[in-house]
Length: 91
Image 1: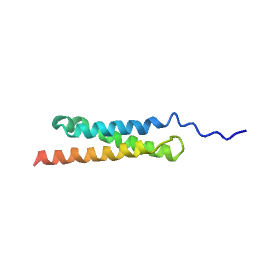
Image 2 (image 1 turned 135 degrees about the horizontal axis):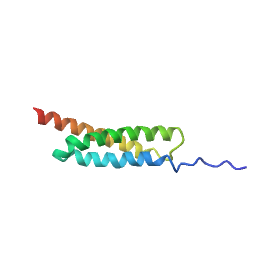
Image 3 (image 1 turned 135 degrees about the vertical axis):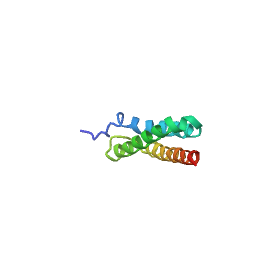
Image 4 (image 1 turned 90 degrees about the vertical axis):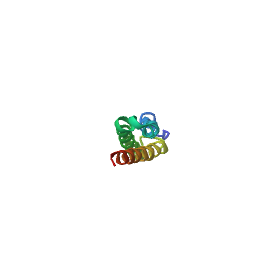
């Protein structure tokens, strides 16, 4: 019997979704009205999915961890920009 590599097909979507949402949140954070209502929650979801994708990679259920890490970082940057914009607009 051969040792077959684990099947990674069902775990990779989480990291890729985190990356897509992180990019969308970062773009949305630059728009004035969108950043307050849409980019903040999208960035938070990108961070959560990125962390989940990294955990799936660590458990062996996802082949790549780079999209999950990139999505987490982009989501965190977008969330920081949203908070910064909110703080600047309240002053």
